[in-house]
Image 1 (cartoon, one colour):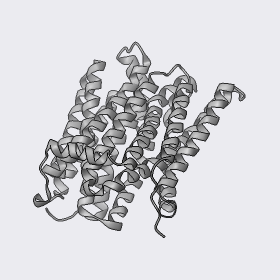
Image 2 (cartoon, helix red, strand yellow):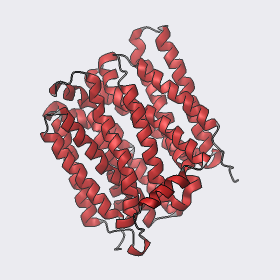
Image 3 (spheres, rainbow, N blue to C red):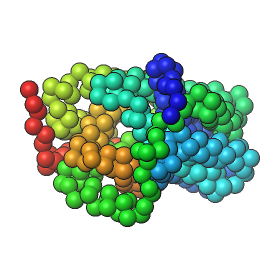
Image 4 (cartoon, rainbow, N blue to C red):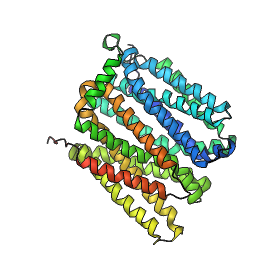
Length: 401
């Protein structure tokens, strides 16, 4: 292990690594319709697979990247993952076949799972206690800006250079991350602290993780919440373009919604120590449930003129993303609390499991798109009801005062 990077540079590096996920996801949103036309897709709904397949690869990759980084070190896993991301981005640039594009997106997701799993572990190697919380908080403050800005960047590139230029941007971002990591960041996991990769350990980790009621419920609720979030991300371009007729203004609306949702991190930081993770996550799920039911009734009853559809949908979107952002982190913390003795492995297992379940849900809801936002709102409402009902039964954590 070498000398630590200055904390400002280290935080910037970690934030940039995390932001590759947003670059690979949100930057693609404005281009889905153009890709559908250019590659002659028979059903526009299939363009949503460009998002969900990427997230599927991310979910599966976490299960591999986390344990392998415990064996071979964080840096090598990060470098290999980013190299996969770069290679798949180049493949996406040159392909003219939709199936090959989906393969490239899946490999991109596999590669980008390394920053999510090994990047977090790298922070944990170097810092602990309040310092750890500070570093992660600073990195997340920078990271939350990426989903807001990425669609605007994607639209600019698509309009001026075509949708393939978005994958060129992914390639360049990957190269910057690869070189920055390779040249400046030393390995953080010492050889004596590494653990052999054994399938038995993985099986035992699953057994330990999913024999605890709090872990099971928290993971399921997280999967339902993420299912609604991923469904929204995949369906939003079609809804804004075909139902709400905003066309090129979609990235601007998405940017505003994402910025509003980012304030949930500030609210959570102010309240979580006083009110607790269970209370905040339950309130967030409950508010999402009530507001989604009201919004669904408003749209189905048609009591408000259709000229207001855009405004109602934007308000619902703000509430949806705000409450989801408020609940996901707390649900992850609830799931991790009983399995701290296997934190690295448990984090990979819980993250991978919740992501895979949520992607399955998102693909199903996305394929229901019928030219309006009603299938999405209905699907999210059902998920909100289930998540609230499940979290009510989640074992509470007694707050020490």
